[in-house]
Length: 339
Image (cartoon, rainbow, N blue to C red; front, side, top):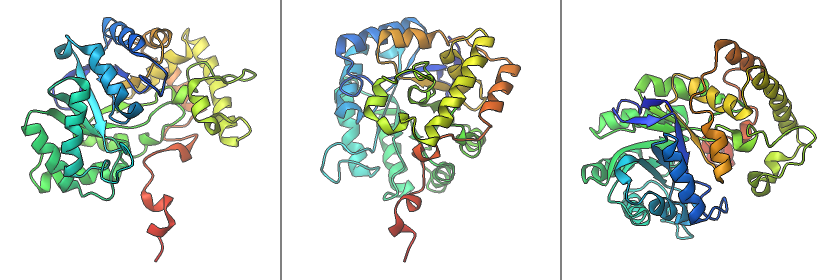
C-alpha cells in the first residue's frame, strides 16, 4: 500500500480508501460481512474509511462503528451530511441548524466522539458559504471534527468557498471528493486544477465507474451487477452513451492485458496516477470484491499505458456527462433560468 498526505493537513492516508456505501440495505452487506471487509482492508494497509449519514438511512454508519470498535485511533474516519434524512424538510442541507444536529446523530451511530473528516455531501444552493463554514468551524473548535471537506462541488463553488473562508476568517475545506474514473474524466478540466491550486486533498469516488471497469460489464455478457439492478438505465446497451462506454471498456481490457494487469488494476492505477489525487475510494460489497481491488494497491502505470488510455478516452472527457452530480441547479430547473 502507498500513502500520501491528505492535502496540507499532514495526515497520511492510504491511496486506496474503503468506502462503506454498500454496507447495509444498499449493497445487501450484513454486519458480519462488513466487519470482515473492514478487517481485511486494515490488514491490507488501508487506513481511511469513508461513509455518510444517508447510506442506507444511517445503517452504514452503525455498521462501520461496530466494525472499527476498539481500533478507532488507527483509522482516519470520514462521514458526510446534507442529503435528505427522511421527509422533514429541514432534515437535510448545509444549515447550521441541521449540521449541528446531524453530526451528533452520526457520532452516535458511529459510536465515536469525533470524526477526522466531515464532508458536505453536495453543495446546498439554499445556504450561504458563510453559514456552513461558520457551523463547521465551530464544530471543529468543539473537537467533534478534526477537518472538513466538500464532495462533488463544481470547481467554481470550490473557489467560492475558499474565498468565503478567507473573507470571514473561518476554517476552510481541506478536501474535495469528486467522481473520477477513466470513463469520467471531466474533473481534469476544472476541478483538479482548482484543488491543486488550493492544496486540497482529493478523494475520488466511483473509480470503477459504477462497475463498468470491474470486469463484470463486457460485450456479449449478461449484465447482472448490483448497481445495474438499482440503476438499469445506466447499463441499458440500447442507449448510445452506454454503447460508447462498452466500446471503451473492450479497448481498455486489451490495454490491461498487454500490460499484464487486470482491468481493476488499470482503472485504480489510472486514478491514483494523477498528481492531484490523494486516494481512490473503493466500495466493495463482498470480500472477493475487496481482494480484487486490493491487488491494485501497489500498481503504478507506466507512461505508455497512460498514453494508451488517453487515446481511448481523451483527457477531460466524460463519456456519460448526464450522470455528473455537480451540474449547476439552473441547468436542471428551468424556473431558475427564466423570468
